[in-house]
Image (tube, one colour):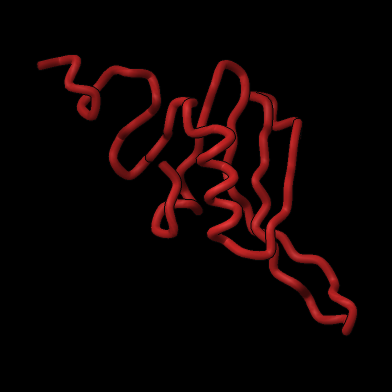
Length: 93
């Protein structure tokens, strides 16, 4: 599950799609840059399929977990590849 500690390196995958939260910026009304958190879905060929921007990180995390939380969760720091096998899955034990 995505949270405030792992959102910038973890993702969800399902079949040919990957979902993650990316940082983006856009000009605001005063000409400054406004930081956005973009929930983005891409194909294996890195073609963007969907993107929704949020001004608050917790809103982006909640949206991603609600919409994609049933997909395989990828956490490269723990070795969880979403494949259901390997050290994190207990399949080997």
